[in-house]
Length: 397
Image (cartoon, rainbow, N blue to C red; front, side, top):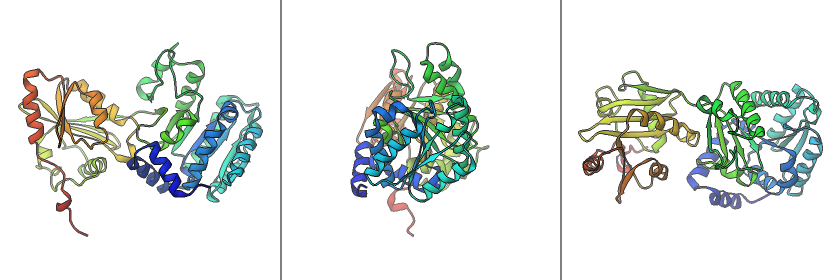
């Protein structure tokens, strides 16, 4: 097993320290059994076992034990594949246990999976016993296992970089609520990826909690797990975005918790209270129904000003920001906003804006503004009051 310090340094080479710390805290706060299910097919075991088993060593060294599912797409020879993965892990002194699922994943097999994880071993679940079943039926077994473990992430390892369209870059995000039918139209995806997308939708429709699904190359698995930007294709149900004219109808404490989580800073007292400045000035609020993201817009003499764009820290990377942004730009063809240079989504803002000015304290961005308004927009953004408490103003405990 690797030393924890070596593992930490390696992960920080994969992503930023802030991302790594966030996801480690998130994963460790969950039940051990809920961490992840990783499906690997015969081709991955045959041609990419070296990087995959390295990933498993890293995860086990962090105290994270994913379920490795073998034979989901083709169950022939899944027992041998499980044995091969097991042997490689044993050579590196990584505890692992082979579990035969049988034809219907009996309760005993589910119990064995949970017991392996509780005992700090990686369960290697072989579906060879279900080799006569259809792929859809084996996906139903995956669904049963996910529901039993309350899994938070399912990863499909692929020799590609994610879901791919011919002649186009891999797809980074799929919002099933709005993109499913279009992607399944003829020619948009390969037959195999189209089938996988259909099966994933069935799987997600069965799960009542937030669960993400990713398709990723094993060389990028850790980047997918430990960075907000991810590395493969993230597939999710999609968000319902509510539009409010003002803050009267929203749960203000939940909105404040969301904003403070996103920015990692405390808001000044009373800003969101009835009659507070943000309450008075907010013309429109775009809000993810579960209070995982929000965008607040106010009107100024120059034009619309995006005062807050926030995605709850643990939900960042799930595409909620993209959903909020699509509603925002549909309703506001022109607006401006500001962000500190250290804001981790500043590079994303650069891609969304039509112009910006970089200053030491702030970057000011705009879309759709006529040239004569831009100087006034910059001045308005730079002179807007700060809504967050400084370190010196925070109460001492």
